[in-house]
Image (cartoon, rainbow, N blue to C red; front, top):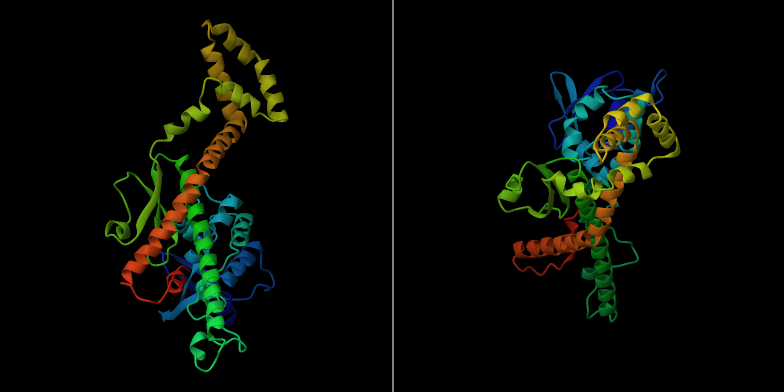
Length: 361
């Protein structure tokens, strides 16, 4: 049941909404999206309600309380949210920490609309056609293996081989999905490490095989599930932002900044260079290497243009491109390690590899 359906059934009522994973309490108001007088904010809230699945409901103090899968929907769409550039740090924990403020009206109508539109992927747990459903549908004209007896059907082995090929294909599909998620988690950690002095680590959830990113103050910190040997880490970075300074702050830093000025910024920069303010600075700077003038130019460009940000992002993306091959290997090793750990937990059962990847939803 979608939250929107619950709102339709309770027009005018204030519904208390909790998240299934995070300590979040927010409020939606019963009604429908085409109610007369709905503004952009109400419309965006109703559109959000259409995306949220109700996990459970209860009545408390004559109020309806609905628990929904909001955090799961947000986590499924972190890439889209990052592309929409709505959060400084596009991390599930940070986003959910601010969700109550967001849904209580502390953002603009346009921002909320963009946020809802970025939530395109639904939670596969509630999809009847999920790739990772443990109960797969089968058509009437295609018997399952246990419906065929080797003595009764001479095509038994042919059907068995076909089923094994399909299982291998499904397994590969899930494996590629996991690999993509792991790679993207590593990329998020890598990018975040450029903006913060903290450490960013990527861990694998033992139960699902899916990655998650955690921000830490030191390398000795870790989630409790990792500390007790359940989840495991695959990558960490950060802790020293100055590591990247040589990429940007080299001997030709001013020249690099000037090369990233657009035409409008360059014209304003040239106007400033002809101003009395700068001429006075030149006259007062008696040093041979013109350090004060150079620093003044750098500060002016950083304050009045987008050149520093553009150069910074370019340097970061170049570093990321060089790191891509290594990240791909880390993702591949992570899946292999998780698969091996699941098999060891099963203590050598003969269920095959497919059930392992059914856990990866």
